[in-house]
Length: 85
Image (cartoon, rainbow, N blue to C red; front, side, top):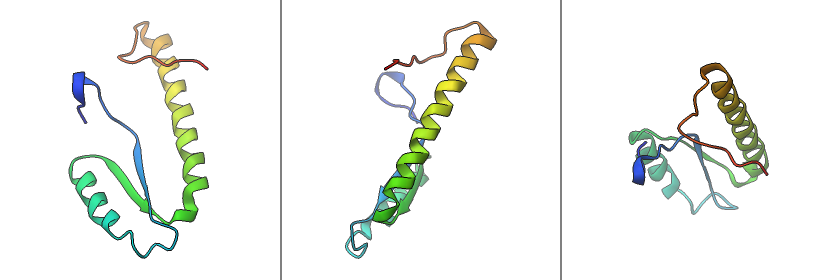
């Protein structure tokens, strides 16, 4: 997905329902719109937040490794940079 300035969006979007999951049915419509526009979006119950946070951290770590491999294998700078903490 193209963003302002030519940046690219990637990665999953996790939509979390409210605590009871009853009053957040609008998330289904939002999910459909995001998927139609090419995003990877999913709707989850509120209590999945911990496992989703772990998955997001794992995906981010994998992206960093992929970025480092890109540098090594191609000897070029990828179109993005990572800040080390």
